[in-house]
Length: 246
Image (cartoon, rainbow, N blue to C red; front, side, top):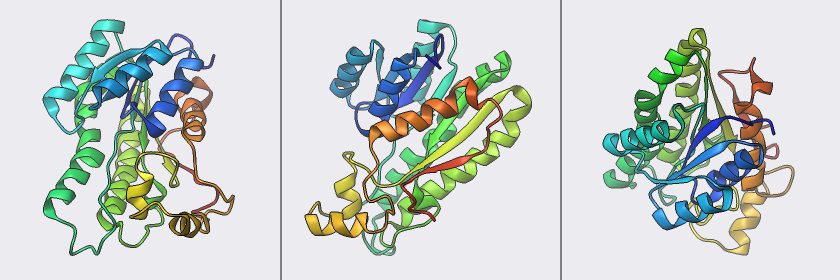
């Protein structure tokens, strides 16, 4: 029960890594807000973990503010924020990715971190405590070809994590990131372009431990980084990648 008594918002928690993180946090004793644009999915996961479902578009300032207000109204304060919501574009040449896809990727993967910080950091600073976890990617450390602007958005998130960590440390707020490798989530097919045995084998050949990551893997890493056991850890972007970035 490492998160006993803690309150946590997890964005993009209706499926994939976010759902795995929400389940692990609840198992460790946290009260969890399952935030997602997918209302039915958020409600299903929230019911499973005994949490609160919140419809939220993380790229929209009013929607993020409503999420923060709902969490504060329910709990009084937020101890943990996990910026997990993310999207990608189909693999393609960097000059052929559409402006619409570029804007969407940067809005959901980068602007969201800015918006949640504006909505939740002031209260964390006032309380002198808080933990923020950004779910970045190995793509931000060791980019794959044809995932160009997705790679860039995750590199942005890693740098944002370090910038936030050094600025918020004097206020008792820790900021870390995890870098998952491709995993068994709804985004996997998009990363690969097509979900075939051949494409899976190609991706797996780059992961020394020989398997895709799972939502449980991310939940385990996130629970540690957001717990008091990691009270001396801030500004870290931890690879959870089976050795992919070695």
